Amino acid sequence: MTRRGLLFILSSPSGAGKSTISRMLLEKEADLSFSISATTRPPRPGEVEGREYHFMDREAFAAMVERGEMLEHAEVFGNRYGTPRAPVEAAISAGRDVIFDVDWQGAQQIANSPLREAVVSVFILPPSIAALEARLRTRAQDSDAVIAARMARSRDEISHWDAYDYVLINENVDQCAAEVAAILTAERRRRARRPALSGFVRSLNEEFEERQK
Ligand code: GDP
Ligand code: ADP
Image (cartoon, rainbow, N blue to C red; front, side, top):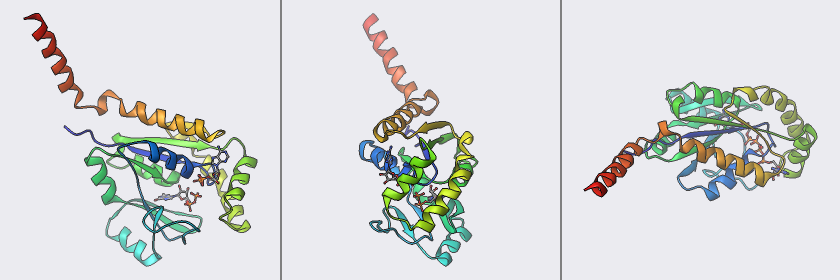
């Protein structure tokens, strides 16, 4: 019996490090894939269509929502973001875990969906607001006005921290990524998520019986 995959949600205020940490996790973890969101925001330098996001216009986005093809969707920083449903369902039925970089609205919708049993959510806090702003500036991909808007919204994002299963502070990125990996490992080991274990324990019992003969 194939294990059903986990829906592993990472949220944080913009610039706290969730994209960096999810990239680090994806490099190391087998059986983990990234949920590529759809967005109406324009690509940043270095972003590739179909890798970070599916970039689309508002009409194409609205059509996907209309057809029920989004698992969740929300408006963030004046752009629409959404999670295409089909790749997620295919991955988790095949026993692959899926990592989501979504905001608190997306996390809430996924946690209230029929897939809720398989959801694990992690919120990443910055060590300080000054550090958050410095990270947005060193990323050097947004204008001053966009950075100011992201900073203004980060307070609202942070206010939802207590709806998550786990909360981490990203002071040192290697340590924080190791903690996220530890959470993933522990959640994969939950007995309730391991239907194949009863077969394994049966085989151990058969081994006991063999030895008694
Ligand atoms: P970032 O904050 O630097 O990662 O900038 P982005 O423009 O890539 O993302 C802006 C916000 O939208 C972040 O909080 C993301 O987590 C969130 N986001 C990205 N994809 C989705 C999605 O599919 N659904 C929802 N609800 N939020 C998303
Ligand atoms: P998010 O996806 O949450 O918006 P990013 O992963 O893009 O954030 O990180 C924002 C910037 O901060 C990037 O330039 C990244 O390299 C840097 N960064 C991430 N974690 C740390 C950390 N612990 N210390 C210093 N810089 C960091």
